[in-house]
Image 1: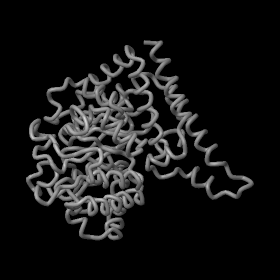
Image 2: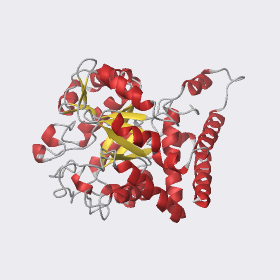
Image 3: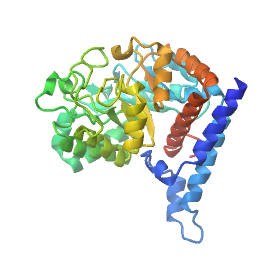
Image 4: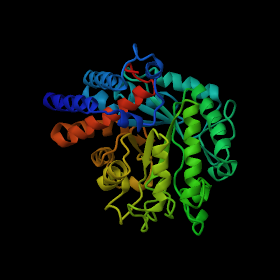
Length: 400
């Protein structure tokens, strides 16, 4: 185990040192105050941007090297937090296994309650601060409601606001999230639902979560929403790559009817995702559906999709996250630990599970595979570096 510890740390140091300004920009994060100050200094006292990036990368490498194997793997895990269980339901996941993120699920009422719970959970983290996330899309998918939160219209309705008005509204919604202790919104939805499918599309169209029936319409609203989230100080996520607008089944509740037999690597419906990446999306969420014309198997476990299509073809160097792989029916047949290792091996970073009980299993299996497989250990190190780089850019580490 000690030998593999060295491999993971060495890989993390090398990867952090190779982070370029362009790669940092593609994380979509808001620059830190120190970076902004450096950019506005006079030439005689300013720090060259490359030096700032190099110093930050060195700090991130040192931060990773100072963490235990379990703590590093924990940065790749996000756990669900539901009202019924409250903060104690994730205490072990965060305090013992180092889970680097939590997500509010199940519907929460009142900003004061959310802020209190977020603060309590944050206190469990002994390393970098947590990603605290919510699905705050609007319409039927708005996990945080009540006093302190606006009633957000559905994406279908948001698209009618126009880009400028949507950005303004999204800025306000982001400010509400931030005031409640939430720093990540798992939105906007970048899926296109063709008009001839409409509500027959189980995961998106049925709930009016789409911004439009053409990639052009979706693109306009996706970029406007991301701009608003960033203006309000919250990280944004485009989902569900490479698109679930054509499938009939909902991957949360079904393991059948989740195959898109049309999508290819040149699919026009990839345009909203590409635009979201260009707009600075902090996360890209990969779906659990199947795309046989692109790769064999489910998207989140397919290197051809996560690495080949998203990272190589679209040029995304930031953090990639799963949809729920805890309670979701689409992955029920896959052993819990393999859901994590399969995603990381495909090129992914953060594994999201609604079930806190999954975290110890995932941690143990990822650690075991990293100890046995140097290639996988390097993939873990790369993922940790990407996560810590984004956390640093969002002000969540000591390197910020």
